[in-house]
Structures are given as structure tokens and as C-alpha cells.
Length: 449
Image (tube, rainbow, N blue to C red; front, side):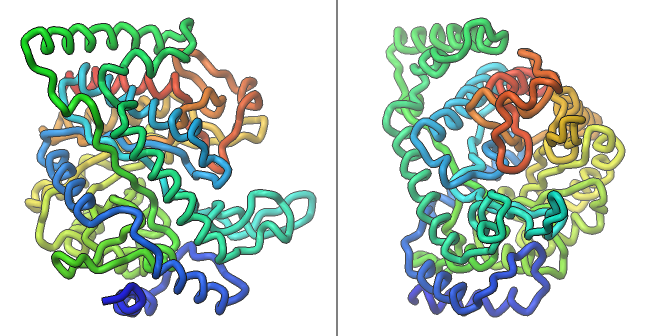
């Protein structure tokens, strides 16, 4: 079956349903041409890799592993450099080492990477100095510059998203299998990290302990291959359905459909309507699926998502990524977890402590308090501990760069510092130091379970 024909086969089901947050392209024919061309491109990931991640997520859902999912709020086309990608990967590898060693738990590593170029927005337009233009919806749709020309949705950008994702994945694969991710590199990942940084020093101490453990194993005559490479998967929000559909392929082994734009895809808080196009699309592909659940989610809705997306009750198929806000998680999460657990479904529960805790500083910068992020994670762990269920992981927006976007943390960033390196294209991200602080604190909470 060629790519075009399964594009048609799968298109039919969601195209008749309301699809939220889709760009309004001025030229329908140009969009069709771009999508047709994308349908002929090679897959970015393979069905077998998606199956492998589904089985790893099964371990998370059963309480045998922990998910670390992180990366940019919105990737940008000009951020596809070896340096940017290595910095992001390094931060995730360091967090993974902290969690694996300090919490004694296998960690499944998934990047918000190689496809996170689209963002849902609360308003379709933006007004500055009396001029109203369409909002910036991510590099996959339009340009960041506040000009009429830049803000017109351009379907050619879908092909640029594919190419940027391919370049990113190529680098990620090279780093994770070519020696860079070798556990014996735990110190090297820290060399450029400010020695005065409290989290950097704490990490260095942990790296020494890992070194001692590895030396002990080597002295005993064992040096497992598993330490030399790392399994690393890609994920993004499946927002632009034209793009996701164009990259949906039939698996030659099974005849099942897979979205080969990414190993795991998730549906956001703004597009999770049960009768909407995004849920319909996700129900047709075999990838591991995540759904963001905000504070308004009812237990009934959660159960309906399971019916629609995980009818076979397969551990690893469905992940609930809860983003309630630090002030709401302890009130809203218990009922969801209780009722889903009582239904017999085995889903992975993951906390996204970023999206419910955003506010605007006096300077006009969108920011988050590190303490609020931490408090939401604490609430998440408290709820699971009280119910005897498994806190399955964290989903965070982070960067490997020393940005100043979230306030607080060990190397304290103040509201007045935000302007220094505020580089995000959308939401504020944790910098490297804050990300490591978070990993140590999560490891402690996990051990306390």
C-alpha cells in the first residue's frame, strides 16, 4: 500500500469532526500539495521502535519504571544545531543518571524533541500598538516576527518541520549510540557546568559514586554493553493533523497504522475533546499516546479516554499527563486516580508541573516559580502515596542553556533577572541548573514512596 492511499484511508475518519487549533491556510491547494509531498517522505521513526517504547511505558504503568520526558516548550528551526541539541540531551542524560542512581529505578527517557514545532494558543490573534495580527503558532505554521507577512500560515513550513525533525533525530541517534551517552561520561557531561553551581557540585558528587560503582563492577569482571549507549525516544504534541496524517504509515509487519513522525505523541489540554478530530486520529494509530489532563477533567472523561484509546487495556498504550497547577493538584487528582484504578485499566500517571503554574511578571514576561513547579510535583507524589498507586514520571519544559525564564531554584533567579536571557519562543523553561535541582528532589520523593 503506498503512502497516499493510507493517508486517504485514515483521513476519512477525523476530517468529518471538529478539529481545534488548526491554522487557517489562505491557499488550500498549496496545503494539499505540501501534504501530498510529505506523504511520500520516509518515516522519521520505525514502528518497531514505537512498539519498544510502548513496552517500556508498560513497565512505567505497572510501577516498575519512571518516565523522564522533557525538552523545549516549542522548538525553532534555527535551534537545530549540534550544540543546542547536545545541551538539551546532556541535561536529560544528567537528570536520568540522578534519577536512576539516587532513586534506584529504571528511567525511560523521552525528549520533547524532533517535532515540537507547533503550539496551541489561547487567542487566535495578537494586538500590539493598535495592530492586530494572527498569533504565532510555532515555526511549523508561521513566523515569530510581528509582521503581516511573517504571521500568514505557510504550508511549506510543514516540510521544513519534517526536515528539521529529521536533522534533530539524526544527531540524537548519533549522540545516544556513538559513545557520548556512555555512563562513563558522567563527569564529562558536567565539565562545562559552572563549578560554583550548587546543583553542579551535587551532581559531581553523584557522578563520583557512579564511577566507583562502575569501577567495582569492572573489577568483578563485568562491563555491560547497556552502559555504553542509551535508549532515547522522541515525542511531541500531535497538534497539526495534516502533518501527522501525512506521516501515518501502514506497518508492513502487521498492517496496523503508526504515526511515524515520533515514537510517542500526546494530545493537549486544548484539543482533547472526546468528539473531536484529535482523539479520533489518536485512536487509529498504534503509537504510545499521552493525554494532558487539566484541572477541569472529570473522572468520567478519563474513563472515556481509556475506552476510546485503550479498549484492549494494554499497559503502555495510554499515559495521563496531569497538569493541574500547584494549588489544585491535591484536590483534583485523587478522584481521577481512584476511579481509573478501580476500572482495572493500567495507565501511566505522569506529572507536568509546568503548564498549570504560569503567570505574567510585572516586566511582561511569562514566567513560573520554581517553588510552584516543585510543589505540584510534591502534590502529585503525595496523592499517589496516599492511594498506594505509582507516580509514573515527570514531563517538563527545559533547556540545556543557562536561560533566565523561571524564577527561583538553587542558583536563584529573580523576577528582575528575567530579561537577561529570556529566549523561549513560547513558554518559560527550566534552565540546566533548575532541571538538575528538580531531578534530585524528585529522586528523594520517589525514594520516600
